Image (cartoon, rainbow over all chains, first blue to last red; front, side):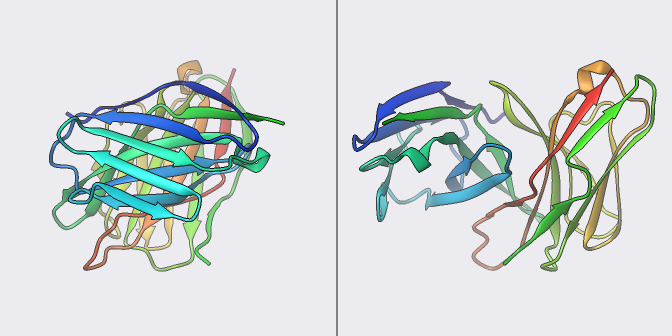
Length: 114
Length: 115
């Protein structure tokens, strides 16, 4: 079955880079995602990467995928206090007629200190 | 903008009560999902539906049922609530497309406390 693991907590100083790591088990994953959850809100998609890519950059966000090691990371450059949130890694598997089924990690709580 | 609306943000129920959690999406998405979120466990899929009147069990369906009578509405039902069902419940929807990136759009969540 699918399993996604993340560390629980990350503390970082404002202006530094943050790196959040994730490992997954399903080698047939089609897409991998990073979602952000701010306090009292649902999850919002930050970025995603197709499984045949190894890197994707989007402004301050860099996603690295090591498919051999089943390791995904999210780097946030110049971290701001507004980046304090819970970040979820997720993998997807294609289900016939139903699209993608996502499996989420436990979430990494990122605290940005001024 | 896609909007997924969960009718109740906070509920307090007693053990044994029947509980309905309602979710409505306004973007004609085929797929709808119910997750529960618990600290350290992340999101776990309870049920999903890929069409009206269709439903599929997720990873933790025990103690729950669902209803999808209309495309825009997906309801989660706890027939007899128990204290271990105290949790945050998140509804999500997604569009099935040729590209099929699988992006989920989430509601703000319903925090259920069962006493």
